[in-house]
Image (tube, rainbow, N blue to C red):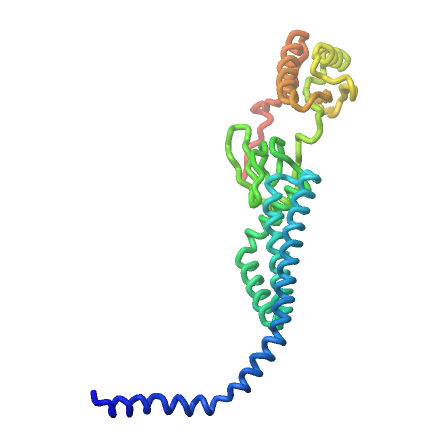
Length: 299
């Protein structure tokens, strides 16, 4: 390519660039950059300082909360969830403070965050209810693992308490999963809280029997049984009197773990003792109608 042609092409490139640079006010933009650095540079430095100090405070608070839950004997399965929730809340608060310090508008951000939280809450309403119920159960502790409870028409031994549900094992080895949301607000009967329980045995005998003799038989069974506690004192009382039968209630106290074995043993021993002492059981009275008592049906 001839030298003159090459020089002409370079002029076509360089001259427009030169005129553009001349029109570009470097001093003006340098001043703007300087003002921006002076204005936002200090804010950025302060924001970095706040973030550094805030990070240390958040970590210290997380450690303090974890140690506090250990000292207060909070359930181990609940500690990670509470620590995570508190950690996330503190970090979000710190980030909001840092962004506000820089000078960015947070109103729209907070509005969007609130709307998103509301939408997520509505979508996960059932799960959040179970989560809140699990937190309440693990915090208040109306029952523990190993307790025998009755709630919402179900009964069994508490096998596991999760954050969303509670697992029961029934006497016939069935597994029941109960959501924590309804369970936390339901009536729960805990049979394992107290160390002792009362057994009430109801015996129905004929009205022709001597009540004093029946009392003596039941009292002898109580005296022979070492699993019955002397306090509170056992009681043998008549609770119902009908035309053909008398109901006698035997109320005794025992240790919780011996409730059912003692219940079954005394029931069997009472049956054998009644038979040995000729204690008659009530027989339902049936009236037989003769043919003369039957009136013909007339139309």
